[in-house]
Image (cartoon, rainbow, N blue to C red):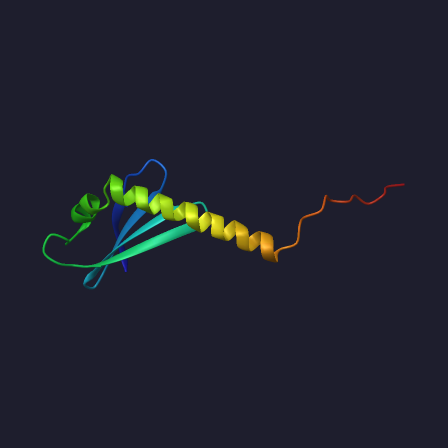
Length: 93
């Protein structure tokens, strides 16, 4: 798999990849990422075609999914990791 380019977005890092007969688009924000894979075909052959595919509607749906993923991540964290107590400092004499 190799990077064929980047797609501009104000809040997300969007990277386009090509491997054999597939194109992939990876969206990243913070510690989360989503990857969408597409078979190459007529009208979907390279970076320019992916840039058209990743329109405002697609990107908005990706951001909605990131919000759901973030909530799920925080909920899991709260269920399974202990509350952090305030740091206690050693007594210095």
